[in-house]
Length: 118
Length: 113
Image (cartoon, one colour):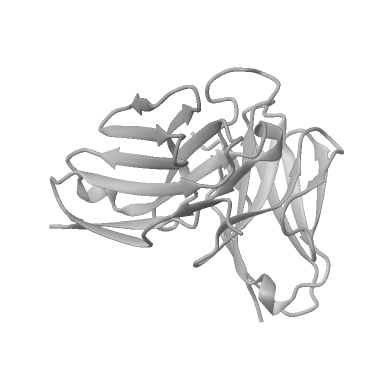
């Protein structure tokens, strides 16, 4: 019944390491998103993608990049991890917003990936 | 500043009582709002949504109220149960699903036995 799968639930990395967070959805959704969640700050949008090979910056893209080579997969990349990137990372997907259906904008989230950078 | 916010970070209620979680938003152009529930160790899950052409929408034990005049959103949970214990987020559409949602900081609902 799992619809959005994040490959790693817990990761511990060292400062300067390259980190890949993988996300796969099986709902044939057009849009995919990466958020980070921090206590007292809620969810903040890092990057999103509305189509294969397309990406758009969210509110806090600095220090991150993304890759969408296939419709079902959206990867978040930390080129050189830093301690302030210790966080919970949430992937989500949604239907194409061009469809005017109630619920088309609803995001379906994965379970999250908790990253600790030492 | 924060586009969408919540009035209280923690709300404690007795089991069986009704809960009301509030949310304020600042973007008067927002036309779609969603409430999410996040249980410990899980990602946020959709509860209920409402469009700006509505004032009220009801689901199973939950009701969302929208007051566009004061840009206020609330989630009412009837007869709260232990399983309702979670963090609740309101979110507003950023202008279409492709842009994602802007989330409030969340309210932690604690159910007292």
